[in-house]
Image 1: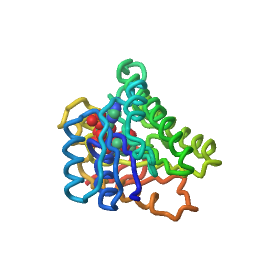
Image 2: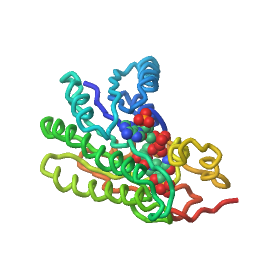
Image 3: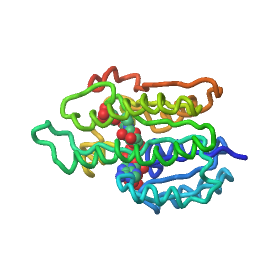
Length: 252
Ligand code: NDP
Ligand code: 8X3
């Protein structure tokens, strides 16, 4: 039987690239995100292109009831998930702590931390029942360092780092591998979302150096997944060659 991966935030960027790569590796996929039209198109493309089965579930990871309802209502055979990629996440704003917006803070914490927890609770219970599996949490260089005005986003990714370590401990006796993949600057819709649709400001983030692309992170994730069953990559940080820290870039 084909392996199954569940990817959150598959409508764009890193999640979408993971979906394409895993379909090429003949994984059947459960793809989630809020934008159902994108999920439908991606599912059709992957089903046609790679002849894999794709289930979609459109929900907001911040809504605990919706997370549980959507995942619980998947047909039983879809619950044999081998790999969970907790990728859905975002940053909102880039303001000093005294000027930050309550709404932005809630959005980041509710999505990056609480959303990841809601999905993980459901899916790790399936994995425990199935006697194994693998969880890959998408952290960030922002989960390793704190940079000016990054405050709450950095805190949310530090929380992902701590939760990855906690999951590895708590799931040890269930044979579940747990990894954190921490990217530096990847050119996706991330900065457009951070700057609330300001494309010009978003573009500037990646000017003067070669950023990572989403496929670079998907390739890294595939490396993690494809290790032999007795090997767990705990933590991996992937940066553009032109980036030495969260804020230090070699720009032309
Ligand atoms: P994108 O904006 O391209 O993708 C983000 C994905 O998350 C989308 O599919 C979006 O789907 C989903 N998402 C966001 N909020 C929610 C929500 N409330 N409920 C469900 N899904 C949600 O950005 P990236 O691909 O770059 O980001 C993916 C992950 O990588 C994030 O966790 C981000 O923090 C992390 N990261 C990104 C870096 C970068 O430089 N790009 C660097 C380090 C980490 P939809 O809007 O359809 O719901
Ligand atoms: C995204 C990368 O450096 O903008 O997590 O925080 S950064």
